Length: 120
Image 1 (cartoon, rainbow, N blue to C red):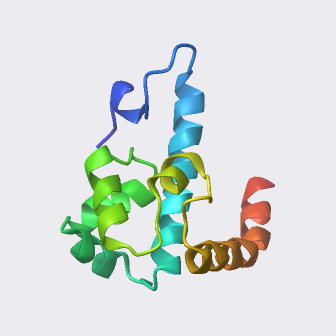
Image 2 (tube, rainbow, N blue to C red):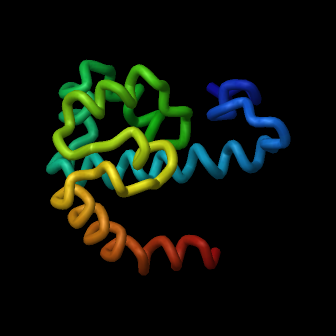
């Protein structure tokens, strides 16, 4: 099922194009995957269960659908060391040191694959 143009936009900023909104959603999706893995959840199904949401809902978020405020708050409440600032903006300042370090390790491990995907 295709998303409407309006549902693909993460916030309503003047001048934010649809392409920019999609790009932001993709960045948030990547950070959500990193945070899940850094929290020790290899399985998206188990992470969704922790949050009390359907597996398909979490899969949609990791696939680029907008992260709702409600789910971001659930992550902040249930995942020790996480930060809403990190999820939405990529700011690491409010992450715990352990979470930050694990996310950085995972990013470094993912870097070659991401570069290869961006070159195609």
